[in-house]
Image (cartoon, rainbow, N blue to C red; front, side):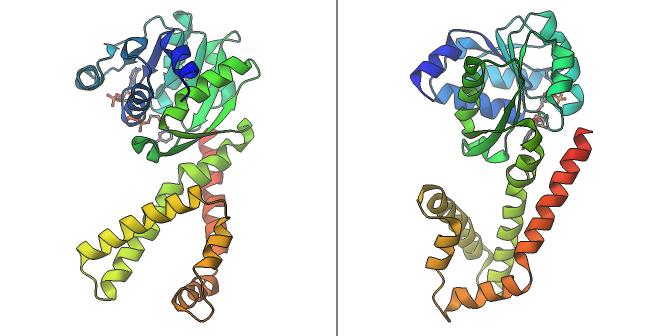
Length: 270
Ligand SMILES: NC(=O)c1ccc[n+]([C@@H]2O[C@H](COP(=O)([O-])OP(=O)(O)OC[C@H]3O[C@@H](n4cnc5c(N)ncnc54)[C@H](OP(=O)(O)O)[C@@H]3O)[C@@H](O)[C@H]2O)c1
């Protein structure tokens, strides 16, 4: 986060509504990025979580909505509209919701037409500040509203701006993506054990394999396809393994999995 962005958040009061997994990940990222603890208030109904946030982050906490300039809504989807109605009462100017399946139209309906409304879809690597978030804006949002929301969400990883109609696709690829990768990790660990490795060694190999390959893919100027070709010598070991995956139609299977997740996301939104 740039110092201009952290100072723009620090100069106003940000309410993080919902001090659960995502809410606390965002607060940790914001504080690490230089936002001051005095500029954040955590609104959380659970007393234990309020106390934990105050102790861990040194931020103000409240059981109910307080007057604030902007808010991140990080409660479960079924609670979002009630929270937005309360935020409207306190005159909030900007709201970002990270709730799955709650549309900009629903948010705007609850918040009123004067408020800049944004909808984000983060993923769980946000918990280690390596998330990726798709961010969509209502037509009321100004460039400074957009920068404000992006500066908050970039505290926990990369932010990609998308039109709202692409949020289901973002959910299917990146929101659900960690689940697909963890499944492959599980299968690789099991396969390593089948080949004679201990559970402990297989775990170590696969955890570091994902970390190293992820960093290589993120940092390399080469495409995933080029990186794959580089590790695949003709007639070599990788070629033997990949041939099995290609013959089993792995690409089509992944395409079907993402299509199913996108369809489910659209259904949940409706
Ligand atoms: N986790 C993910 O990977 C992920 C990814 C993308 C989007 N999201 C979205 O992020 C949102 C939060 O997810 P999460 O995993 O962080 O959930 P979570 O851990 O359950 O956190 C939500 C917190 O909000 C509290 N809460 C409920 N009603 C409230 C209210 N009226 N005012 C203040 N606090 C209230 C809950 O307390 P109680 O537990 O007492 O109800 C809970 O502590 C969800 O809408 C989800 O769709 C999550």
